[in-house]
Length: 192
Image (cartoon, rainbow, N blue to C red; front, side, top):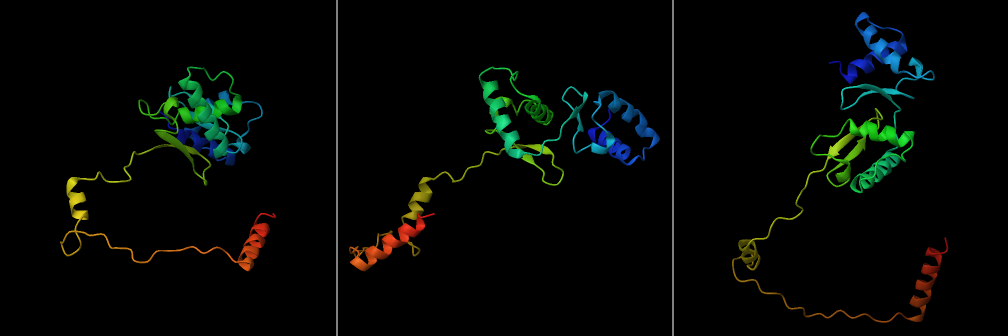
């Protein structure tokens, strides 16, 4: 089975016109899929190669707009949960769905649990998407009886007693000068 990286390597070599003999059969497979407007010179910029889950080779359009892809996948997730097919998606949206579908882990990632169990990331250098499985992490330990009892003792081991507050804080009203300065501050802040 030929890997995507082997196909991409053959495409990059065809782009530079330095093909090895072993890459010629791969190039012939790719040429069958290429549209008239796709040339070796615009490989990886306007088109790329992908092997889908069915192990079939296909041509995709590289997508580098994370926000657009994320919103498309949120929409796909909603449609999936409502059992509505992706028929209204345009070519760009279907391209994103196909790219991400080839990266999903079977049995773990579904369109229904996008953004809850998994998400996407965009590599800024290669402009390629990857999928991320979110970990469920606890932000706080479970509190035990021993922890509660320990927190009720001072550092010396004696029972914890709350310190008494002897000073009561008071707020005095603003005088006229303070009031005027505060109003000027607010006027400047919200004048923009």
